[in-house]
Image (cartoon, rainbow, N blue to C red; front, side):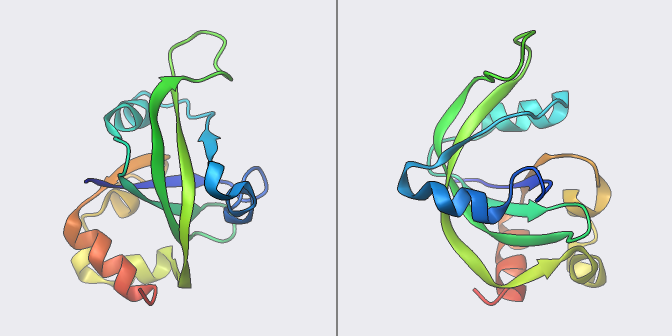
Length: 137
């Protein structure tokens, strides 16, 4: 199993929107960056994903799971990008802010810190455990 982080603007699609989808999960569409697309292509069923709110919030909201591997993004007319399906696993008891991640020296090399605009990114095992601990898991 691998770990990932997906970013979303909560005004467009929020943690609560994913929660409302329940066990059927939902399509993660609209990613238009080739590096992020490649990460989404690498995601496998069962991989765990942090869902991160961008914008004013800037925080990890919870954990989702990949339930369907990459397929052509139905919102991409040119056919260059992919979607995946994810379902909510559990919320973070205490959302982990970007400020808290940046303040933790052990997380200085995370993609979240180094590549601020990348909407789909890998998370190492160590980063996953530390962010989860910071969030009360």
